Image 1 (cartoon, rainbow, N blue to C red):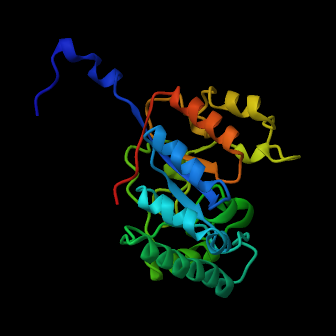
Image 2 (image 1 turned 180 degrees about the vertical axis):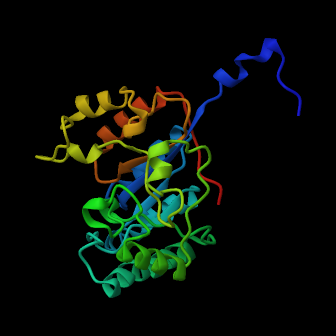
Image 3 (image 1 turned 90 degrees about the vertical axis):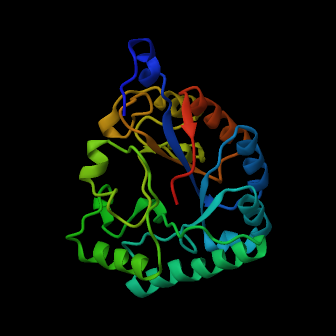
Length: 255
């Protein structure tokens, strides 16, 4: 493979950083409107859905599938997996799995992949959830359940953060994230550190602390972005528009 000429040296600096958009806790009542908005911006997403919400809003999930989005598993009713039995954990995943199969069947589209995200990003290790510790027996048991049920992590290209690799998130079968929008802080009374409203959450996207989960402005790594379906449509649009100012190339992972 030949190297680019000096005239084309700007090729690399002009390459867009890839972003994989993942959205938890769907489907919601305005799910279709959020899908349509993403479609208008040329963005596909993985929607990690709760089983109980799929039972309430199946048509919204079917609509997303038919538009080319992916429905992932986010458990049935969103428990902390470090606080439930392995039997309950298997039920939470497996029951929702059957609901997703039925949704894809009704959509008339073959389910392309089985992907899972733990509620609260709690992979079974309790307060140690910021890494996938394979020495933890509960973590290993939950990973075994995911494997037995056919779940895999998609190929997310170019995730190069040392903290992410050191945490083992590239080796686990569930999907974690590299950038949490903290959009859940928009809920009344919720806050994390200094993030508590739309201006502070938007400001977080401008920070440059790549090895502490705030690397949107760092070109050395691509991103797995976490948002939530329960925020208002107006706030949803505002956050996406802010993300688009970062010159991100949104795409689905290799399946």
